[in-house]
Length: 321
Ligand code: BMA
Image (cartoon, rainbow, N blue to C red; front, side, top):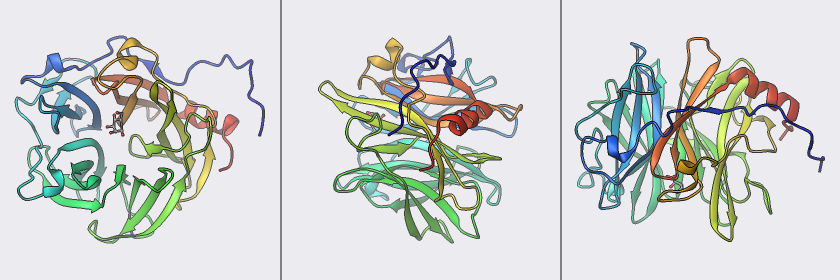
């Protein structure tokens, strides 16, 4: 194993916004316990839309849209839940909808929302399409439990749709990719990134954060690693890069985490020491990436990073996986 460079004082890749946390339960137009883990997208008019996971005071989650012109403040929050579980027709949603990832799909002229559907069988991956975040076409569960942390790629790869997701195996939870002709039936399953072992920050359990980011160098992945210790779990973020034409091929993977719980709102909440992004927006400069993340399963925060710097970091510090 190579040595860690101990004299590295390069600036942090991600910069937190000074208004963090930008959304909390107190901002909600109706009574809720917590708001976190939002999917994100830029609408055609430049508005930032967050599809927030909202946990009600039964402990069950639904999704609610918040819109802002600058993506930081003056959020217009839907006055009631935007996308509610419908357990009568979709029993796999009995215990709620969680952690949405949004991908705009030009071929369909629609946004694909891939989210967790939770019921007694465990969490599974479900898909819904929408044009307007008002009405939704449900595809139901597309990856059976236990599976979550999934997002669709924005276009077909070699003629097939591609979904990155995180099934749970007997001893570890790793990131996989699967392919489909019609978004209903999935196959060609391949493991693309493995959790490390032992004392690593990303040992035993990893998962996709935001949808993959398409760059000239490849698909940039922000993933979370879960370190278990005597006081619980720490959720931190790392980077990996995958081949544009063969997204199952990992080109680079960083050893160190690039973002972790440091601020009080990330350290303390319903679940301590969690940063959990499910969405990003890219500024018109094509470089400034803004992630939106759940902080301690309690509130929503945001941070920015340069895509160029993340790719450079991977080039310098990343290993061929
Ligand atoms: C994961 C998911 C996330 C949550 C995180 C920390 O397994 O359930 O929704 O933010 O745990 O509790």
